[in-house]
Length: 235
Image 1 (cartoon, rainbow, N blue to C red):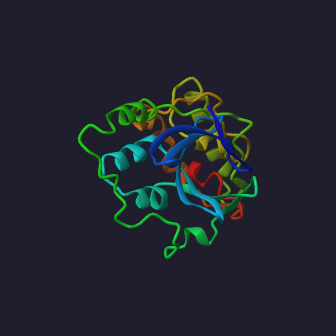
Image 2: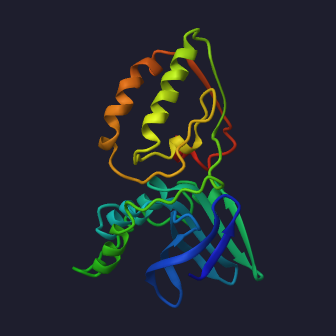
Image 3: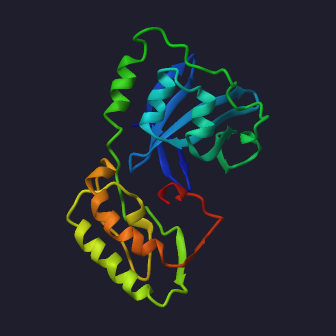
């Protein structure tokens, strides 16, 4: 795939599928090396340079936009994270996060009634393509980092809780579960599963419910680095 832009948080983004274009792509999706999906909207292309708004999203939300269930603005503002602005001027790319381009009154955001207004069957091929991506999530242990910096407890029985958590891990390590949380959470030691597949929670809900009551009765103070929102979706 052709490279679009290199970012510090998500790595290189590559053109994936163009959904609307004139002389240049206006609405398209990108992927990175771990197959995360990004919706990209070109909101400026003139003598001042080019500008795109980019948000990390998911295949299901893109499908909803293609079916006119949500607007382009709703997809990028309410069903995406990251809020990345990409500027291209004088042969150079510049990226910023959460800047004024994303303010509710920004001239760069799509209009509130920005539906695709698709004709019948127009996006059938695209919908079929994104449908195949719904259950495809790649995990790279070197890519994810811990969003929880410090976990402590004031409950004297926390050792018991920790033992139960470790017991839970031993049961789910050989199962297929759906959670980024297990790759990012530290609770008095590393709680992780190296290979997971994105499937329905019902496949492992019964195992988790056995220990939730005990865990939630404990007082736990969690400190999170609020300056790094890259992986808030994992929480």
